[in-house]
Image (spheres, rainbow, N blue to C red):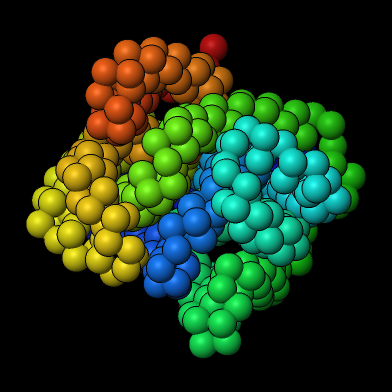
Length: 451
């Protein structure tokens, strides 16, 4: 398809980036993403109120395994967002639909394969994490139930990527709220009221993902203009698939390295015993709250950066970068202060085990400051995803991971769990700074006048 065959769109061409435009995307998605750590808080609280560190540790290991699997496939959302945003900036409605169908088919295939090989994934995960036998038994029950949701969970990545690429934060909020709202209600009902414990928490996740995928597909497909529908030959055209697969490869490697960093942290934490492992799981929930809170601004950066590149309009790129950075750093500071002031109460809500509470209090400042050390990293991820600069994002992640591993090798033997958390904060800082250093060169290359 040539550029002249693209359908017109009001989004095509130069546009002005304002605080209102940023917040119109960021605020709904921040609210939507906050339901995810809220879900994590509820799941942790449901299991934590059973008063057994083994159950909480088993849930923590299981959650890490799903992070390792599902977040490895986060390229389905990220690549879709970047490509759709750029097509949106060009006014190419036909290509927007084509990107959606490519991503959705890949998501369903990947989800089905993950389900079929789930026993191997579980065995490999338990070998990697090395939990104690009682913890491993809890993890196995949770994993084998929750993996049923794999096709729907990955389909939700493609659906959300399409919505975010068009800057439709309100629809994204609705879908995230639906998925996590169902999950939260059923976790409490099945886990506590019915007494199904960890299995109830897993079944709640399965239900939320399936309902969300069906609802999201109905909304997206129902809003497609049939006259812009691409033919199947266009959707799976080899030349059109190359950019998507290239992005997917780089983002998958980047996501795998990121998950390897968190897996390494959990793996080292297991050596400190079930109580410290459970305390770290509680504190990682606080870290995730900060992360999802800042992801709304990263999503605004993805859409606006991608749109500016699609429109080939450098002023919008520069202003989007400045304004989203100001918002991200300001909100990160507020978040860190809030966790320092009110973190003890949050820990008490998450677990009733006195030994786990005492351990978590000690390391709370490290978890609280992750909002500040991670703010630039989260934002830069959004910038590079929107720009589809996936190779640089992959390479800088690898360099940061090498620095992280070196820091842990020095800090953990010297300072124990304090060194583990210090290493995580250094990793977040390195990620953000390394990516920031690449922007001037990449922007000049991207907006270079056509010869």
